[in-house]
Length: 109
Image (cartoon, rainbow, N blue to C red; front, top):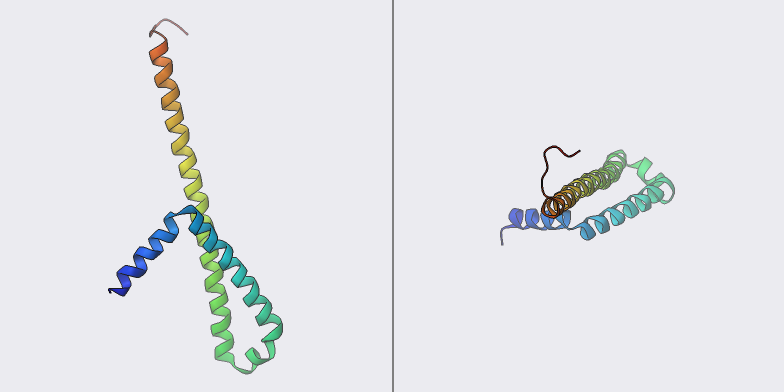
């Protein structure tokens, strides 16, 4: 099995499907909340004793947060694009029916 191609295909599938994308956003935000809580309370003294682990831990939290933000921005853009596309389709459908129902009169207002 070719791993990079497989990862790319799975990523495309997760991003393109709205339900999968929103589920991924939900769980990534949930994971970030748990990581921030654990890092701020339960793991705080241990993380302070290990500076490299501290930096890696909070970098991981930032990475998952960035994932959730980028997915949310993509979702907003996708929803907006779908709405514009649907509005144009409906307007074309409406204008198509109106053109067939009425004869075209260039002098009419």
